[in-house]
Image 1 (spheres, rainbow, N blue to C red):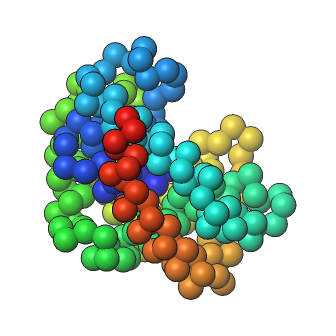
Image 2 (cartoon, rainbow, N blue to C red; image 1 turned 90 degrees about the horizontal axis):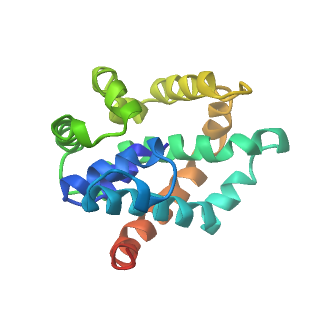
Length: 195
């Protein structure tokens, strides 16, 4: 769900970017996916970042802050919150302006439209229209994002409300995000060498 973070971690290769963004839209074994080697490597990096994040001690501690009935949604909320903090603290992680970077991502995805999974290709014009990657810059955007995700969940969920939880522990989340993202960023080369 933290698509902006995946885009930043993708590096400068366009196919890696496509694969990293496509990672949440594809299932199955990498070897059977009808994509180029570069896109396949991007999807693999996306999956490795997700595994690393899920196992990291900081997100695990943050998930524990949720009451038991909400913990099943904690990962989703964390992903959206981390994209919010990445937007707010963008200058700490990239020398390129956030707007310029996001516009570049949209341009790359549009240019490689035939390489995108069908669902993502169909959604892309609307995602660009609503400025999907920059929506989480505001708390209203976070709330809207959580509402949209909640509407897509099979069982339904109380996702929008938990943003109030974040408001009460924002300094802790912000520190955790900055510490975790620095670790992810510095370990990215190590992850890439294992692909």
